[in-house]
Length: 206
Image (cartoon, rainbow, N blue to C red; front, side):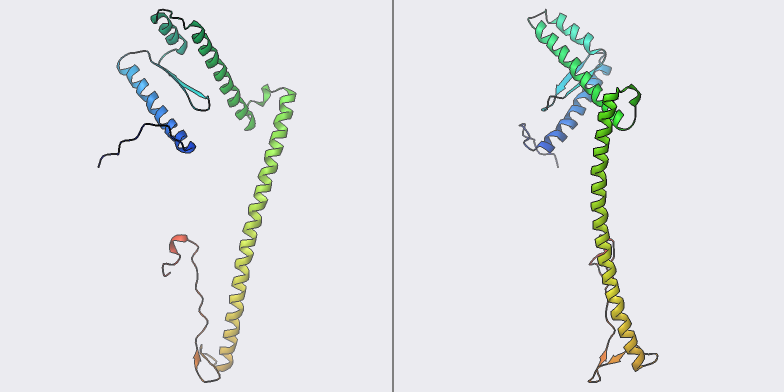
């Protein structure tokens, strides 16, 4: 059965749009790489997402390919646009490098290159992050503790009932496990259902 035809229009759901963008961008760059290898062609692809972040692919030097395009276009009045594009690419590349450097510093790498003021800012950020992590950890531990205490109380109650039943059974019959009520009817031992911890076993008769 073939796939249904996809209507080409803007994807309104943000998450779906981001996933689709990532998949289609990867496919586009893959095709660009294939045509550059198979056909010995110089290929350059520049993509900006909806938030302004840029992604690019070049089979050789992006600057060289853009220069070739500029010359091949006959120098049509796009010099300013070309310069603006290169400037924007350089700025975005620098921004990406700074973000990667910041991420490396957060993980404890490349801190030797930071100035005292940067180290102070990083220290404050890490202290705040550690505080939030500890608060969340405390919440989770409290929840798990309450859940465990509830299970223990339930088991203690069942154990108390079982001990009372066994004591009554021993009083009526030394080795028996039946107890008769005031009318002489045999009372079976209390039934306890052991609920498995695995969700896939619950309610399946185990």
